[in-house]
Image (cartoon, rainbow, N blue to C red):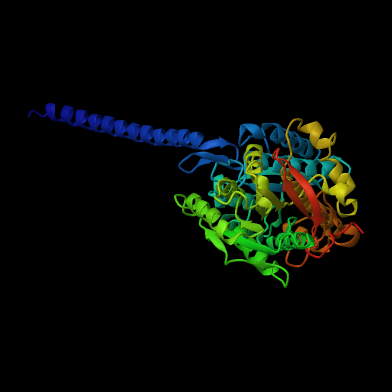
Length: 499
């Protein structure tokens, strides 16, 4: 190699190294950029809307929205009204302070949920009514309420995802201070309730009725407990002198169904006396075994022809009740007449399911959570102005025409959010700054003249969060599948009044 050749080779070699290094650097940059872009695309695909993401194998949209995203098509009208009200509240925040309340439940329901689409839509409609009344209606007060819609997914499978989002909002500028709704009495919903409470957020359940919900700070519920429903139902049966002297209990044995276990236990304890007896030990079925429970209910219906009780107390969800009534309609002992008494989950049946149940030839009674006719039956037990919103020509009729409110869920959600609103107003008057713990403490001051003027009854609360002497409607299914008010009762005899 000549002296002149070597330097050129060396110069070319370093040039090559530099080019290779530059190419590698570009490749690394391109790879990183590709990862970032892919991540953004993945995030966009996972995101349904601000605060709402696809979760689980079915990719259902769960999380928290201000109403600008509708979790289901049938929820669009009411969610738009909530979104518009929230915008108005924020726009006026310079003049009027506000805090945030969330309404939490399963809004993307399937056939496996105890709640129906109708029931969760009615819940949201009632929640909006309470927001409107507190913000600029007949109960207008300050601070105003911004209402969020929080979806835990079918069967509350994604409860923790949504609850963590709500907890993160506690210290945000919007100040989440209370969560209402919370769904039926299930293990997942109770876990959500406890986590919210431990995080210092006040909670108001609209339809939880399981009796053994205790030791939860800042928690109240507007629904009667299962024990109270059972006492009211048993008292009604006993007032029908000589008609319902024998009974049997059919109960869901699924461990996760707290509603069924507490309802069955309470009726078993309350019903027997010297004139009334249970003709057999509790009959059970297990809804946690999908392939078995429909057959179990058919077998239980056949057993009734042997035991021949005058009344059957059904401690199970409404979805199971419809199967049981079909089995009972096809019983061998057709001449034997049966009356079935059950709990409030009957209100979660669709109009079609209620009509089918009414045509089984069996008399069906149930203890409801609320009914629009309670006001007419016992005016002193229910707030007239609140109940008027649910009467023909009231605000609910004007806002949501053609939506048959047959289940009372709108009344219960209205009363739950109204309870949160009254606690917020009282906390503001007490110390100025409203926090979750201060709202929770105010719930225990709701008594006397400070009772919540609910459409399901005047509300005050025991130290454990249960309502005092809550009005319990006794309802009967008509051949048209409608619910007719038979009586208004309470565990303590007469319902609480506004006095």
